[in-house]
Image (tube, rainbow, N blue to C red; front, side):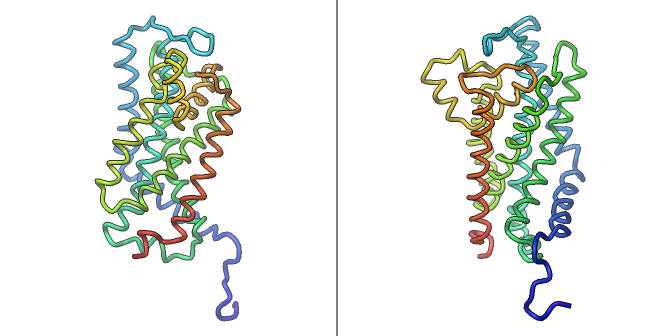
Length: 271
């Protein structure tokens, strides 16, 4: 036995980290019809509505190539569904604990701040990948849509770092929010508009220079453009795939440091 006052967990508490991660995954799997399949169906309906409205023969000029409209929006819809659900999962965990008075279940276990953040982010990213996989499978079986991976590493990179970005934003929202209305406000006035105005349904190349500059200030643009590159082999806008990957990784790093600082300070958690 260790002497009194000497910690028995000197490095990473892998057992505690795994336990909290599994708890977060089981929480959304218990209601998977609502957390996985409903978002997948909703995203698929976007594809159906737009392709029916614009016709199966419509095409988009992107990166100097002509791409069928259905093939153009399909990757964007997949990753948009992933991002929205990563945020939804992460923005719920600590918030519901504060509202129900069970926040001590997150703060009292022998977990470091980094381990707590990793478990919450990992659970949200797992939900995002479950939704993305369900949407991709549905689109792969949908006639007239081609979602065969061309650059799998690009797909994995932007799916992972994009989901982590929204998961970190969700944890930050969960720390700041005091009621569900606050989290819903971030969803409706921040996440939703940024996702829809990121080039999911249109090519940024066709915008005026001023609106192109605005689009390039949107972090969602780099995620969606890079993820789409993994299926089409071309990028939207004048930013290269390497620059997009570096930008989103840098944003994740800054977000992780900021959220870590908030968690460590106990702001709005230990009051």
